[in-house]
Length: 139
Image (cartoon, rainbow, N blue to C red; front, side):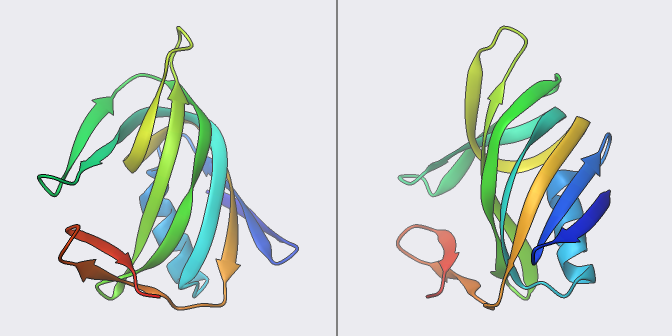
């Protein structure tokens, strides 16, 4: 990954073969960032994404092992169980311009990911919510 600090934000270039969420977490740890918002575009060669089945309190994921365009990627980084956690959603487009997306578990860069990371001065944590079965922002 390569990065540059601009206007109190970071421009990140995550390169082929790198895990996106893993790289973002390590970057935030290195920069002592506890909360941030993220937005990006690019192309990945692997993505695991899906949706949350509230009735069963579980994520239902599908994996894609082809190069797909990341048409939109946005989310946040917060503290969960004393570690950093990326909560992001993405929209992806395949070679036939078919679109899919949802909650992103992880992605591996296939060409490049260009991400704008905006640090927040907060230290918001995610805590477990019994009703949903999710770790929600404790605000």
